[in-house]
Length: 443
Image (cartoon, rainbow, N blue to C red; front, side):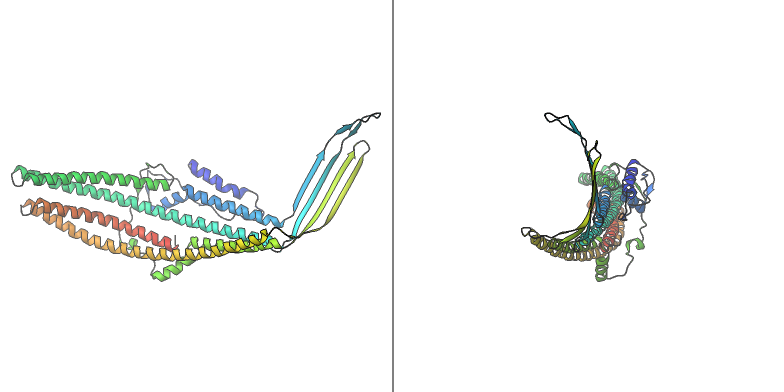
């Protein structure tokens, strides 16, 4: 286990080892964390596992949940009595005219207890509110998990796509090089003009630039994935390739887009978080209202005071009783607190409605993006087959002197575009598929 994973493990186990009489620490940290051995071939599940354990932002969100759990324990502790102890010891000397010195060595010990018995539901509403906020934070953490998984999916497919785009650019460069060499031979034989040779050479050199640009994009996409896994940005990955079959591009459901929206309203953690905050705001109204009501507490105390050590003079005290605190006037503060809490509750309701609309729109867009990506991939495969045949025929015709260099280069350019289109559209389907699952909430 590397140092970062060890540090994270120590951090996540500390709250569990702490005193927890109310059993509030229930959120578990990610399990089965593994080291990222980049010398080996890594598949998507392994990358996700490493990312979930290593991602700093995700770990931060987890610690926020643990802090909220401790906050819940703090709220529940209000049901228990408060017990305070105090003590003092001092020594003083007094000298009056005509009298001997008098030494006073008093000491005292006191203990007091106060137990809130009834507060018209303030503690209960506060505990319920903290629990609702805890649920909201837990759902927010779940949403962050989903976002991390999606980001790793996208980075993984982007890196694979850019690797294949680079290979395609290299193949295209070889094709243009072949055309340039053929044109150079024909120019030496006087079969073509110098302009044909220069055009073939220019196109070949431009293809070299395309390779350089593809290499740059590939490096940056690798850095994106490495950052998500909290690894050095110059990490070079060996990625397992997904199978390019029909099954991998298909979603494992036959739901309509409307049914997907309904499913998302049940599953999306962002919506559950908003609903939990709405519930917390509702409890906030009850808490604010409790400011109008009295509270009743039980009190008890005991004390011992020794005033003169020489004469063994002492005093013991003890008391017990009930106390009531009645709010009479707070300068309208409580009334404004109630109004504020109600407005916050209404705002939370609108936030929930807004989140519902956002989730449905996200599912709708993700569904149609996926359908479009599938159709685009299908058409691009057909275009590629046609472009391959067109380039093959053009090259033969050019060698036979039946076609110009311009037509050949055009056919090769179309083949390069088609080859890149198939690569990018295939991974676009996989990314769109991951986006759709994320939108539904099925990660």
